Image (cartoon, rainbow, N blue to C red; front, side, top):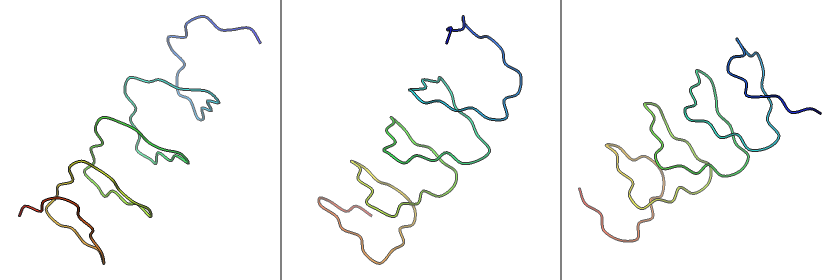
Length: 79
């Protein structure tokens, strides 16, 4: 396959598949972003819900409401 020179415009893409790494400056979607591996980032911001079937680990977790059957804390709890 011959490599393409820098592409500056494509019009509307109905589908895009990347088999290697994709480095983008900004990614916006009105739909879902799914990953089968880890998602790593400096900040994850949402106006909606964060849902996990496994563990969520963080240095600081804050919110106005926590719901669940078990909350395990190591360290301080401030209310």
